[in-house]
Length: 261
Image (cartoon, rainbow, N blue to C red; front, side, top):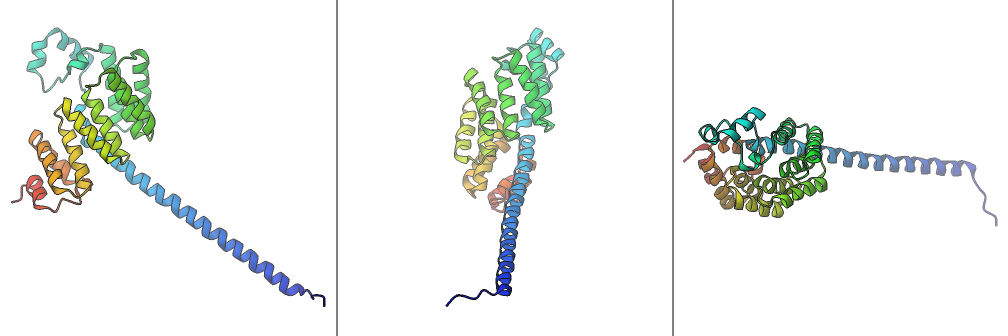
């Protein structure tokens, strides 16, 4: 017996199929939108932390010297020693020309204004004119890292370290880059390597913040207390540091940061 086709029912089937396809597309579109939104939120949160981090840590490395300061300091070492708090010129910076330090200061200044692309551009000029300038590769590297280029940033920082393996700021920035991209074990390793050549307050702070995320009160306070001993102003930074949320209710943290007994 031949099957009798019923047009009405066939049409209904097609309508149902179309509806199901539309629903499926709607579900997939919603899931895709939710995923993108989630990534955007995470990215914004990460960017916010990245913006806050260097202002709390790296800024004390800021070289505020002018060309006149550099020339005077080179001519009169005793004046540099007597005015150490106002003119902080490292031995490394003295080895560079006034032009190099000027270019470096320009790149560093815009970096701390969060103009990372501009900082990269200015550092490009520095390393183009002076390809052996470790500071230039270092500042360009950390600017690239904050601008989302992890590989490029690490490559520049490693180049800086290949020029001067004991450059403390480059070691610090390598640790910071690892931390920003959630590579915590490597960050700890390089913060400690930075401390091998320079007793820098924010290297201790960086280590403390990583242990803080892990909820390790003992190690957090070991390194945070060392940072506070060097610079009591660290307490104010620690009060608003979200990395310490897992440990900030501990009596050790309260005593060290808020002077509560």
